[in-house]
Image (cartoon, rainbow over all chains, first blue to last red):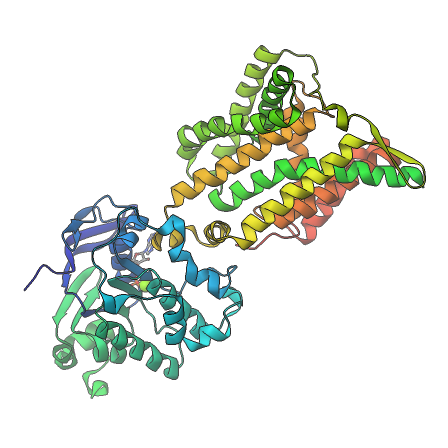
Length: 252
Length: 286
Ligand SMILES: Nc1ncnc2c1ncn2[C@@H]1O[C@H](COP(=O)(O)OP(=O)(O)O)[C@@H](O)[C@H]1O
Ligand SMILES: [Mg+2]
């Protein structure tokens, strides 16, 4: 196998004195989706924040392609090709939809050295993002804060795509969405994967995660308690029951 | 009747000056969450430097520009090496920057002395204009209003209509995500802080031409600028515009109608406003 796109090696992440990620490792290949499952407060968002450089791990190593992310500022990590779709969307409420989308392309966001990672299939631009999310095109001049939850989620994904990432960190993109919108999110993730984007997906929606992921991890109290193929998790009744709160029977 | 109109012009021209100072203060707070009480000292320093430049070159315009530019490196060093150490601790910021203002005030006293000095204005702005109805009013004050409107409009366009402005507004909304989408927020801070210093320095020259410059002037003007920002809402450019107009007019009419209570006329309404809108007219919650 070639060099993985992302390699997280035994990271330990803290908030002040509070010890959250206690030795987490994973690898993600180009164009693959890894899903992190786990109950609230187990450290899923902290893992995303560690990779994005927002809460850098105190020990361990994160490597993107062959570049160590240690000591890298969030903006430099983003410019290297990692975009984030944060939990709760966190779109810019007082900016219009258009401004939200164009922000990652502003002069201040352009890296001095171009990336070598972009492949033709990954090239996104304003028009193409609007084609992907027609509901945003209709509200292009509305303020971000005035959008519905579903529209905000699409905007958060569109904003991430505008940076032409190779790896997308998605933190609970289905949270609070209607079943119809969850299906749209699922379709988008599949399309992104088909276009060669890799996704590190955090989800509480087990069905959604299992339906798109190539590899699944279950996190509990800052450590992985399961790693394997989606089919493997569907059969791991004990993990499902103890760490995800679903009984095996409900899964089938 | 005439006096009423005169006071209106007084108020609006003072508002133009206050806006110059308050806009930078409020933008740096909105983006960087920094309360910089040294802004008044930037005003005084810019004013003195502009005065010196104007005296040597004979050009008021050069003085205004030079006074503004000279404060940029000063503000940068203070930001980079002192204020940044306070993190998000507003109390530490206030104490630190008040201290810096005292130091700068002493340095200015040493260089320019304790007399009150007036920035010389160009001959074209020295006379008076006669308005219909026989009102006569100094040309300089009208020029000041025009200048304030020009700067206000430019800032508004920059803030609301350009991509750099959108980045600043995004930073006011959510700084962390701005950096997570690939924007070097430190570079943005430097830009906005330079703009704030420039505006304050310019304000010093422009204000020094009619309010004069003297030790202590920095605190008097700072109090007004703070009231402007409190009225308008910390962090809001539009708030600084409206706040400056309110404060300028309240001050002018207060001095005219209730000279013994002119401070009350300013602070009374402010207190009442804060009762109903604790974050000011354009303030945002959160
Ligand atoms: N900013 C923070 N400061 C201190 N503790 C935090 C912070 N954010 C999260 N935590 C704690 O870290 C743990 C993991 O949180 P998080 O990664 O957000 O969980 P998840 O995303 O799996 O719900 C929780 O116990 C949470 O209370
Ligand atoms: Mg979370």
